[in-house]
Length: 331
Image 1 (cartoon, rainbow, N blue to C red):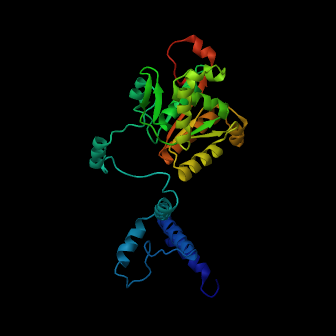
Image 2 (cartoon, rainbow, N blue to C red):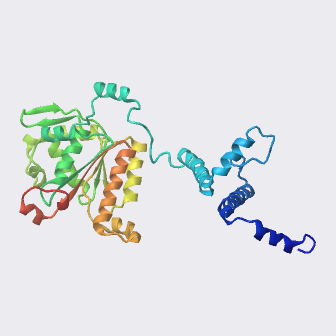
Image 3 (cartoon, helix red, strand yellow):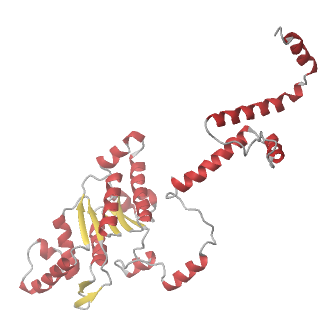
């Protein structure tokens, strides 16, 4: 202060300074400090500010620097980082495009191969859904005891087995199936599913199997059904899982998709259980929200694995007795 006459310098500053210039110099000062901090962290900053007067873009870069804010500099760095993040980290989570991308090929593919899936039971149901389409999840809801699982086993058989006995025509008919199916049981056991499959393939009422009242007259057709089950044993795979969770189901579906080539998954019944509720316990969410998250996970798996998924939920018997139009509030 004494050597450089500091007191006089400060007096001159007070005399000649203009307060209106403060925002400009303060902003510029912050920008320069920011660039110095970035340089210390190993980041090149010559695209923001040039200290080399011999650089042919010196004037252009520094003129632009005068208009930049610290937020502009930070956002520029974020943009560069987000590009790398999208390329190397989160590319699998979303895909960018425009509505016109590849549209001609889409049109040609729809003409050659319409957007329909493998045939399910029921002409009306198939008309509504266009079959079991890959990348989709179908959710059936009905009250207890109306045959949700039985109907689902029938659809699984329709996909897995290419032949069955049709009582209406009194002969064996081709169904067009023959794809692999994983059927996840939550309440039934393997024997319960097996008798349903035998009933579907043979065309006999399941009661004659459960009560053991089938006779020699039934045996030829039943043994033919058994032969079909054994011939196509790898087409209908069963897993018993009484206490499922989202993570267990995800790992199971991916394993069967990648290792066994399965792209049709049946999960017989979405219900509250300790496995699901404990998985979401730390989030502190309601039971119905946990079930919705579980269902959303199934939907995401259908897209990820390009698989068809069929599942079901239950509505209360009280809701069923009320009659009238039912919507998502009944589920």
